[in-house]
Image 1 (cartoon, rainbow, N blue to C red):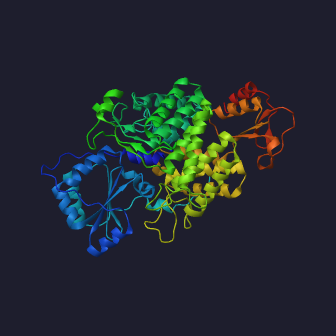
Image 2: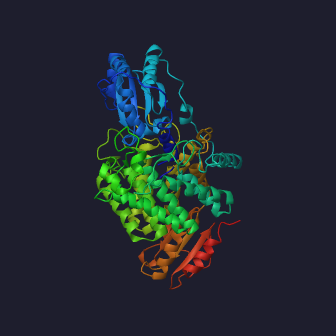
Image 3: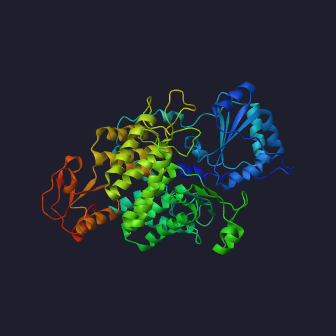
Length: 598
């Protein structure tokens, strides 16, 4: 998305409130429903009492979740039906990535009704008004036949190859292009937001001379700035109505990380100070509102000052007027996954802007997560105490963050951490009966059975591919192949519509060797330092950038193929051959600028 929060997860979130039904009960509200946490015990109770189970999967920052809690679930008819025939479960989707991954297509709030044995009967997306909910509850009582399950067959799908053929690759690229709204700009036609993977793919194509892709990226980034809070900074989640001027005001970490990363990538590609300034405004918001005293980020800021009351008038105020009225609620949970996303974005910003403070902030956050969220074997918990898990998203996000920190610093400690994260993923999330990696730990008697999530597997492939390139390890390369064998199975990618940019990036990276830039020279040498910084600033095709100081040990992967010159040099390597030594920053930048163009 994604990234960064994945595009699928963002797309699921955007459905929140999309289905508004007219009308509301005029009767006075009753006492609210008793909500239990998600557990097997709830279903055991449902079997004993012959009741259905209703899951309200909400987000604490979500306006329509608040509205539904204050209206629908206080309506007398709804409360009476729930008391008589249902057990009620409410879950914060940010706290349960496994359930969020399972139901993200149904938006927040998502409403799922189960039979006592756990069979899904019906799934509904978005806000449901009181009369509509009462009809739904009664309809299930009258006929509890489950609605036909969707996408179940895709969970067990297997590809015969780990690369896209030319025709299928072209078809997916065409679907991605067709998903661009030529009239209003941006990918998608009902909600407007930035999909980070689409921006990255467009930038990569633009670097190869694709002028249409460059226009799409420029337009989307320009229009997206309408969703940046002009007073506090930070990015509103999305705009409704197929336009960019109807923002929904929640600020969630996935959106901040995706926008920060995309703006930094664009700043590198176009050498545009405006892009870098936009990234800095997002960073300023994070430091001001969502950064803990320990240097890690909180989860989100609410859309509403008063839960359930639309806040457009509030967000039209200046800073002083807002603060006189109060500040929307901040969810102060500290999740490993969300911090991994932000660390990755901060590293991207540090590579482009060259500010040591960005590197320090990324490293400080990483060290806190290591100290407070580590699990034995290299993995990470989600929160300090989780109701379930571990979840793939946390260890994957931190693994990618560690690998990015290694690329930025060349500190082997970060590479070791990334390898440990990969080992934990392989041990805990690889599915035995089908390819791909599940969103939560794969256990023999896990309930509900863990499922793969598309964007997590895309990011797993990108992580494993990049890590294998650095380490030369075949077992890590095999992890990428395992993820691709599910992602490339018939129908899996096609079910995504235009949201396939991440897959196209991941498949290209797994299929083609990277452009390899090697800086050889002492870590204390100013010319070597400048060349390495220049190599990191280069916009993103598929690249591996490394710095070898011969005085500190052997070359990476034993590739001691570079002449001993007595002064620093840069080399561009591909297909088993390297360039002549480049002796200064200007020569390196000129050489890099000529790559990739038709």
